[in-house]
Amino acid sequence: MKTKQIFSLVLTVLVLTSSMVVAQTKAGSDKVVFDVNMHCEACQKKIEKNIAFEKGVKVMEVSLENKTVALNYDAKKTSPEK
Image (cartoon, rainbow, N blue to C red; front, side, top):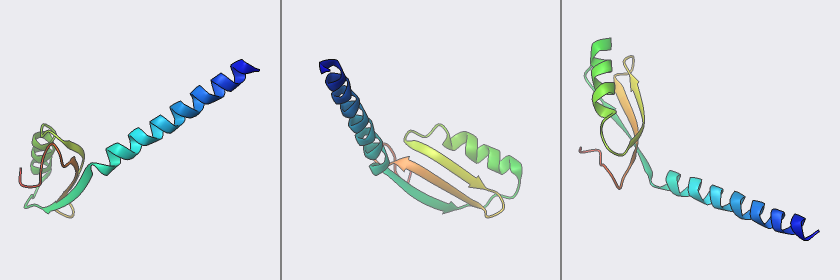
């Protein structure tokens, strides 16, 4: 009986801790959308290749059709000016 209580307590602590970590990572993320002057797939690939090395960039969406680049980034590591 005591083993079940301890197991339940440990499981509850693990679940609560993991949800707090997820909340912290989402809170530190900002999003910005840039209008860019790209005309071909080579331009798109060049942007994707170069931005991938920028510290703090988490998610990148490059749209050749809309001529935009949307970035989710960690505001502590980078800024839109960089």
